[in-house]
Length: 201
Figure 1: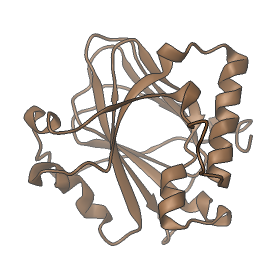
Figure 2: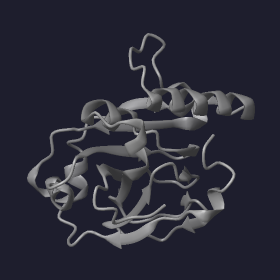
Figure 3: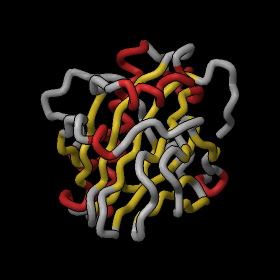
Figure 4: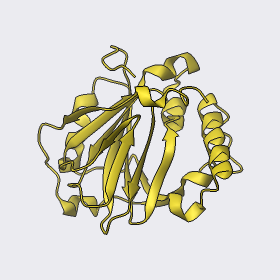
């Protein structure tokens, strides 16, 4: 797969939101659906795009690695209705093509080593294959770091973040996340088209 051999060349751009406006009680308003990275594409899916094919290739790779399904469990909240305090995370992207969701990683689970295929963003924003290298993903850490939580993007490993810290990467940058600690990890994910070429891979 493209970029797999040169994964060490990449990393994330670190930043933070202007102000953390949300509280733990706001997170209780988010609906969650269980998802498994090893079996994410429904067998009856009609999403026949290049992005979906990339996701199927990743699933095939996990099978060769012998990844257990339960270890890839995570919870997704796709474009939920947000209260006023949570909507603040969307403000910097209002002038762009963007999508958003939330991801929860519970104790003992991992987001396996992967690159983002941006399948939902591609489908709903009519992104062509020659544009996907300009798609970016920003992970917004919704809660403070706790022991046992780790994010790796390319060759860089990140820990000890604070709520509101952000990590942004572009295109098919390889990354993963693990939670071998006692508390859940919640991140906001913003996917956007970097038409001004602000970021590099």
